[in-house]
Amino acid sequence: MFDRIVLIGMPCSGKSSIGRALAEYYNYEFVDMDDLIVEKAGMSIEEIFEKLGEDQFREFEYQVSCDLRNMSKIIIATGGGVVTRQESIESVKEGSFVIFIHREFLRLATTPKRILDKRPMLKKTTFEGLLQLYKTRLPLYRKYADVEISNDNNRSDAISKIIRIIHRKSVGLE
Figure (cartoon, rainbow, N blue to C red):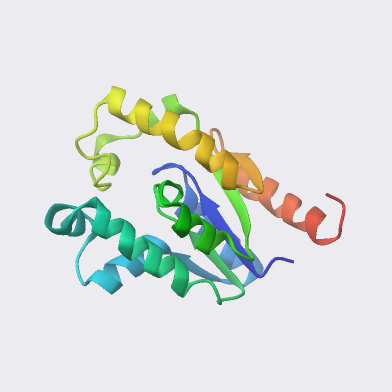
């Protein structure tokens, strides 16, 4: 069994909900990196972006990724952009099993606006902007992931697939 499981993927791909379910199943702690960034910065993600800018947000993200390196029995949901800063993803990946939670672009693009508006990088993003973000990040997610799981249809199916893969890898079948 892996001591640390890291979930990466686009915003609204299901990292947090899948992460909570996996943490419950394995009796691991669940950590959402965005929550730790908010705690460290003392302001919301949206405020960080508005007042300090994306570069400072990425610096907080890097600091949090370093803080998590030595934790065990933990499921970590990263922010969607963690792969855009090499030192952040490499820090959180070190000693971890990394799962890319993949949703096809059109599934992401049809996420209700009320949900997208909670994501600073997506709040004012056009369809074309979201497509560009997806195209830019997709190869990075695939580069850093140990395995890719589709979350296009049923979240329970994605969770079951992850549990099967972890079990098979843990006993040396994959």
